[in-house]
Amino acid sequence: MQTVHSLDPLRRAVATLRETGTVALVPTMGALHEGHLTLVREARKHADHVVVSIFVNPLQFGANEDLDAYPRQLERDSALLEPEGVALIWAPTVEAMYPQGFATNISVTGVSEGLCGAARPGHFDGVATVVCKLFHQVLPDVALFGEKDWQQLAVIRRMARDLDLTQPHAGAIIGVETVRETDGLARSSRNAYLTAEQRAAAVTLPTAMKAAIAAIESDTRVADALADLEKALLSGGFASLDYAELRDADDLALLDARSDRPMRLLVAARIGKARLIDNMAVAPR
Image (tube, rainbow, N blue to C red; front, side, top):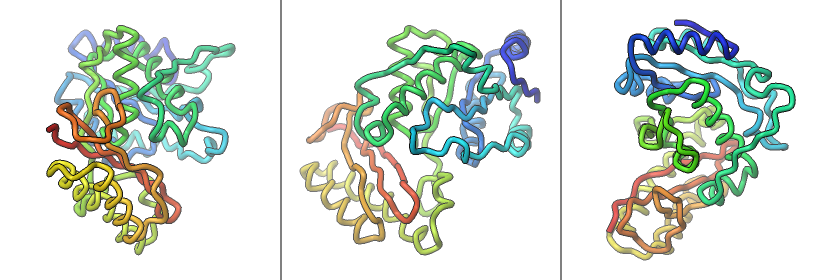
């Protein structure tokens, strides 16, 4: 496994990989956990070689978010990736990613609005900009992202369609199912902020979401199902609900009734020091 930090060595390394097959990209900000490793394992099913990018992207951190506190642990991350058969780690410096005078921003309207976009202004601009650069730098045949952040996945796919990207094209941007604990809670680095009591209560989130989905699929009014979801969360130990919304799975249009298109139930709620997000599929009518 090779690790490179600047563009010329990256291009040489990727060109060498392409001599013997296709390339998959798994973009990350490091501090890897089992969810990231699941993406890597899935990537190996779709391409001959896997490239993992590790870059803490300053453009997607807001004014009140502590960029400096985000963990940087390349040595540990490398030790996790090597046994997974990763061919190349692309770990650029900030200077390599955003050279002096960098002045370009990619903004994807529509799908980036509302949900987490409302709480983190400019966040998805930063995501779209860095991912577009990563795609142009690595030119992967496929790229893999976790479905846990469904809005991010929608933003990236929309960007790829709108900019006519070909490596990868929008259809080769693969969402990988959310990795969950045995009790159903989505795996997240934020779970580490929970006390034992809060962690036990946090399972209310996936449980209440499944109940809301069952209600919607049995033709309960969406507003009533979401109201019951909120009651379940607040009575189950959550401090507040940021949002619980039924959205079109592709364009993230807000829905007040069950649709004949694929849908997602998206939720963000706070418990203790953690803001937990999750989403699940809802069957079309």
